[in-house]
Length: 366
Length: 237
View 1: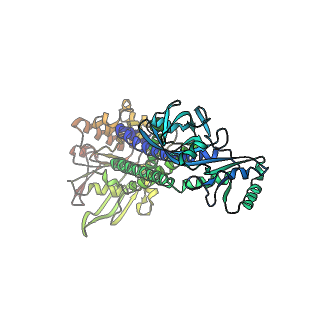
View 2: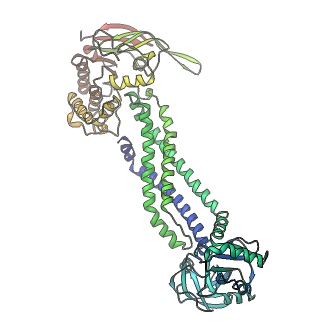
View 3: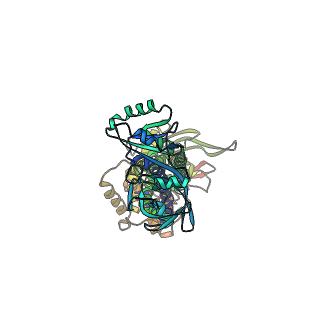
């Protein structure tokens, strides 16, 4: 009761305090959400592609930051294995795209329409059916104000946007899908692919098929079953920009702890007369320390609730301003931050409560 | 804990000396003070500022240890009591009535008393009942829900006295209890403190410049430069 009375004595200060901590909570959750969004979005294309075996150039383990160039004709040779249901060539490279008068970069993905390697999900419109058509990532489209039916230009060629896709936002760039021949025509090197996607008749035969391909084409390919290949790509993403997000989230946590400690210290200094009176009339030291810790806890929990309430509108706002920034805040994040806030508030409270012991009753003796 | 016994001094100071050290220099605050205060007595300490009255109270309540001499409260030598025991002693048996009232501003009158009762180890719904009874005893039951800043100085002092009465404190330490009050309010507080001693059998130690208190005191000590320079019977005798 004392805690609530003291906190509500200065409502403006309380609101500022709650706003400061809530912003820290939102910041941490947002950074973690972006981390998750980037980590998930960057590999979503790989995750969703229905591949049993990924075939890349020798010594290339991922498509995130690995270069892979293969002659498309290998597809024909690989298809000879009767255990293989299909082999699809995909060509992938960064290309400039002109939208109205803006120039942007996309991860241009050339694939065979209807086969594997295309957009994981179409959110509006349809897949490409032939040259002169393109499917754009919906975040990219939102950012540049492009809708289905509009035209964009790549290397002087005009393409019609026939669909928008999701699961194709890799944060630093977004996937765009065209036909394989169109993309090959852009690089002026027909017959090239970045990788092949193999679908098997029986998935359990992946290891045996990979062994046989390696035996037949020694040191020519880098072969990966789907799950290990996905892991390779995730590892590659996590080794890149993602540690930075964790560092920022950590800094947010430290700022949160500092704000809490400062607020509590100021509060103790301001209320030292109360603490001296309580000591005088027989308060156990534990009670006073508990008051400070509970105060920290109440502030932190209230601020966290404010933060969580503010999170959704804030994410929507950021999505409107920067559609390519995909923050995926999960329940796990919220639980994790809740626990962290409770720990931080308790520790801050305990640290601040040490000041209580230094308050002497002589301060209230006349 | 030994209960209050009319023949046993509530407070007993024997040869108490207190010297404070600051920047390597010693400053005597009390020198060889002897004092015995009994249940049912109101003892008055008279003396100018800096004469040692407040230091004597801090030592009597166990907040400060004497440099020499001994202090006994309710028959217990204080030097033998640990911090927890001292805290319990203050919470359960000592009431404080100061010039500055010592009330928590964030709490109402009743809540201020509730707090002391909780520190005294009282739990449950009886707390509020006792607080209201105490406020009734000091004549302000209608002010239970008021915060200190909504009360007059005299009313605040009554709340402080009610707080002591709620725990049925055996010892009331009052430091300049009438200093912030007007003539009428001061007189009412003096009467109230006097009734604590005479009607409720409490031991009341008062430090004051207010000479009206002489008429209500059983014993009057005059202090000067940290010494008790004179002890006489008061007007209550």
